[in-house]
Image 1 (cartoon, rainbow, N blue to C red):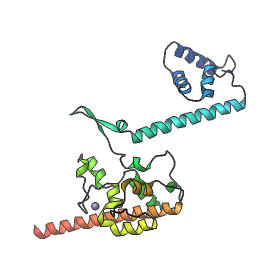
Image 2 (cartoon, protein in one colour):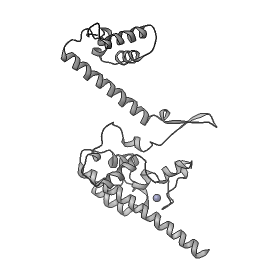
Image 3 (cartoon, rainbow, N blue to C red):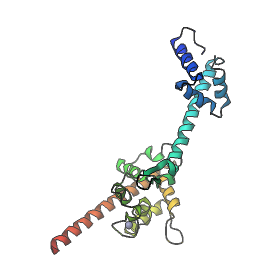
Image 4 (cartoon, rainbow, N blue to C red):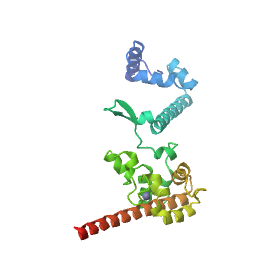
Length: 253
Ligand SMILES: [Zn+2]
């Protein structure tokens, strides 16, 4: 508002401001909501005095910084709610006419608690190892928990084909499936992850140890190697299982 009276920008703003006061919702309405609903008195007073008191470079800079922080905080809160609240991740069941929780992010929300760039993305590591971590973290993999979702198979029926002892989700694959026990024990020893008294790795704690990255790049590289070797082993075993079934069918047909 400190601009000259013949400024096109200022006149456009005044027009929108007056429309907002008359009850028409527009860009100014969104700015008003943003500033008045913040907990920042500086931003609230900026709206109330319509920027007339912002005349120094310092005050303009402070306004920019405060608004940027406000927008960042709001985005992070929205992101966190979306990842963690079931109602935000529900789908409409048209047959029973009710909201059903959608669990695509069931594993991701265990370890992803902060909106930040993960350190494994900054570490100097093999590109295939890095990809393997990303696929498993974001459920962009070929495990049955994900493949079954595409074919509408109930989650409890998305069983591991290699051991038949449980649902093949990220936890089963990385921390529980007996087929990969030797490889798991070797890598987990290097990562200082040890089973609890019952011989099992606790789900939440272990997934966090694997995917809630600190700043230690060496650990990132071990985890990348682990995810890659595990994925390669699974692919080979399934390939062998398929070949085995084909041979049996050929012999007995
Ligand atoms: Zn298994």
